[in-house]
Image (tube, rainbow, N blue to C red; front, side, top):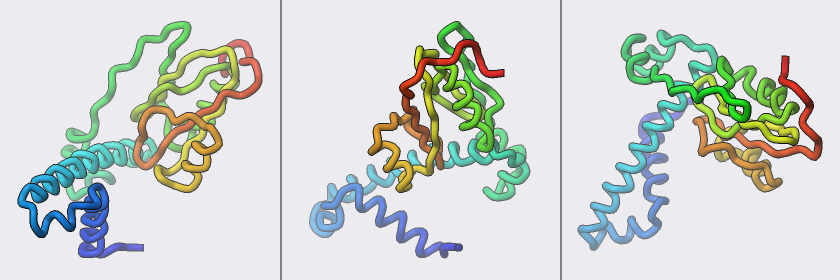
Length: 186
């Protein structure tokens, strides 16, 4: 399903206007309302930039090349890699904290749940990694599309959100009523 430019623009405009339900009325009579609209639009611009960086990282985690990403975004492979190819500094490995690396959109939940059986649970994440912390109980991890019914249902059932989000995903975890298995996954 494709959305045309005008419909896309209208949807974005309506979303920004919904951030302040009084803005439409105030724009007719209050000059300061135009500044409020500029501030809301700037915040939306900053947020869509974060969402874009997260979506590109998600595409890389799904195995897509810089060539494919650059082409989709109307830029060269080199430009895409320079703009979006930063790597976070890893946390040092300790007895209580680890960084699981090389995770992709296709294996990360299985890997997290394997480590979860041994008491490790995610406390943060980024491109191709999750930071995990040791506890005495087993953990289960899931992921859902941000704002989806599944995400809302999981949180309503007491699943704990991990971090803020990694567009298009939100990650959740819950402790299980079982002692952690000894050792680490193979």
